[in-house]
Image (cartoon, rainbow, N blue to C red; front, side, top):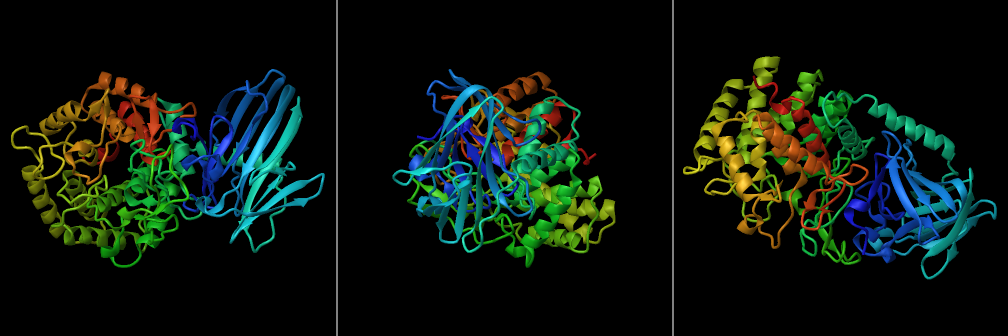
Length: 597
């Protein structure tokens, strides 16, 4: 079986990412983009589905690892009976090339490394044609499958039953570089990379970006790493922000709640945008707004909840039989059927984020405000329509309270844009619809007996998304209805002190099985506690949720508290941006609601 999810490190070139296990195996790599097909797919199967291992031959070797300060250059320090060596691995930040670099650095004594390469293209559906190229002094392995090729340089491999093996020995101060380069099979292989220059350039790029981070509150290291994760998941060419680097890591081990998260959800991207703006990155807001204009181009009624990294619309969901799933959790899915859902909250998320950009100083362009104005009108057109909600339920659409509140927020931001920023729009009509919607929510979205907000109209259940209501200014954090809602969440949704999204046993999502506490939801509760004066509870919960991160500060989607392991796709943008907002709340920042006064 693959390593535990929390054992994986991320390498990123801001186009795609590799997952490297603590044991030195790259078990997941899609080239050249996050949403491309995999070359290494062992994460969703076993080594026979593709991987690249690099570790000392000594079975007793021990390791420690860390990211070089404020970068995604991973350093793994190996200690053996014969010596000490480090592996420095990264994906260079380059204009066009896509590569993985694995540099072995001798520290003391002598260390022999074994490396094994198993190339299985197209989600393990294609074995490549492999041949030795290069020279005895500069060996290389060239592999081709259909339109794709890779060339691996730095060591001479020996073939054995669809795997290629080699050994490398380094002494003190010796360096050996292993490189994998992706290219189109009908083009010439790229020339060897200057690794020294690539390391220096990549280090400077990441650290230069991180130097712009503004954060004056607690948990600075975790906030900086989380902002770096958000940047790593943002395509440097298109501005698209993927929800996670992986597909089909299970929310329910052995179950079927396995989804492809390698796409741009408008909701998650908008929330990410807000986190970046709050910490000094207005240029990223401009790039993402341009991405939005391209992706949404056309009729507002055709707006999707998610898109491909460059704004593609066709994300057809299908199941693969070539990969058996993480630890047997099937099916493995590519594409995502939720693309066809109506989720009423999404436009509100977008307009709240774009208001934050506007307040931060991003000027409206010729098309940006007309698009937002059209989105407000689309909310009005859809106002009598139930939806699938923030959690993308696959059961019957409902009148989800959170969705209705975000529709209210969309109208509210439209009104404020006209009244406070002088933009053109029918503010009086929008205000009337907004206020009628508030009356509806106050009437139907609150439990008549308990006085708490409900998951959806006609239900007495609660939902973790209700914690977001104060964050968009719908009500105060200490509103009696919110305090009763928090009490209900504490009573019904906590597992060992951490928050589930909702009661899966209610059947509202139309799926079998269950799931674990959702990491972002626990951070939302931290934010609520902090905003309502429960500072001690906020600090205690914050410490507990942050302990779910791995040794590199990475968080997946969910956490199995019973077995103390991460679950779901990783690293998860929503988990990291929620960490950032929770840390900000502990510092007294009000975030999205700050401009409602």
